[in-house]
Image (tube, rainbow, N blue to C red; front, top):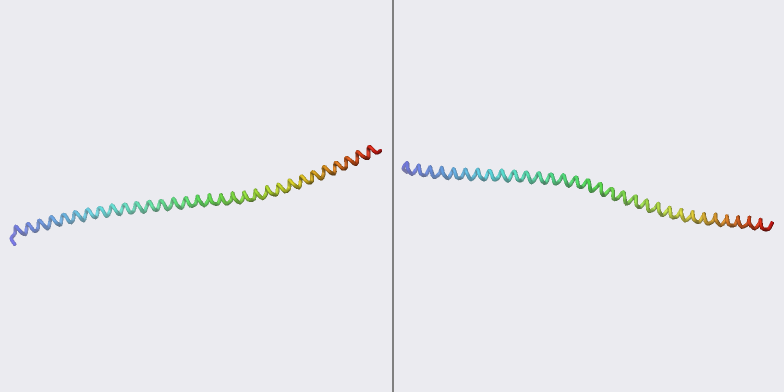
Length: 115
């Protein structure tokens, strides 16, 4: 091989090496970009996880409030039933008292009119 052809081979190999290095550098840059994007996606998922946890806490609070309201409503309903029963008993007592008063008044009136 003469010197000119060796130089041509060397230049050709050098050009191929430069192209290969350029391709490797481009791929390296793409890999770094992908890596950054993956990190961003991981961060988004982490933020989403925090939001879901916070929302779960809020949902638990709402659920507990609903359960508490239901329990208190049931107690209120039971109290209303008791109040109705007491009211019915009070009406019966009032009727009995009125009847007794009427009998007493009638007896008094009859005793006054007979004397």
